[in-house]
Length: 83
Image (cartoon, rainbow, N blue to C red; front, side, top):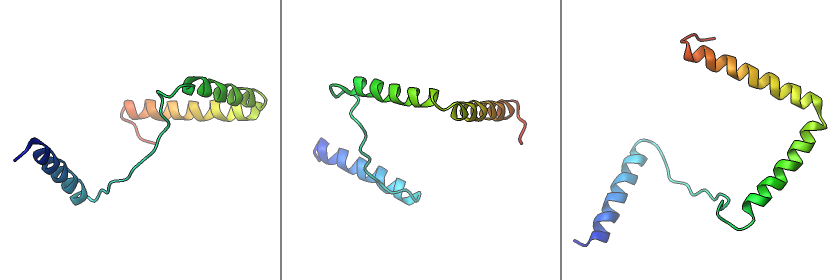
């Protein structure tokens, strides 16, 4: 048996086990973070979002409130209390 067929059998066995757990394979395409210009495009979009956030104080208050609520919930979970 060649190493390639052994590897293929191992992969198929792993996939069969995952399917037996009720999972199914899917293919997800994501941006290539290594692509030229990726970091610059991220910075450009972050600037646009940041400017929009500054122009909407209610949004910032909502986000701050949501972050505070999340922090409280996480603190409660860490100390063993449930809400």
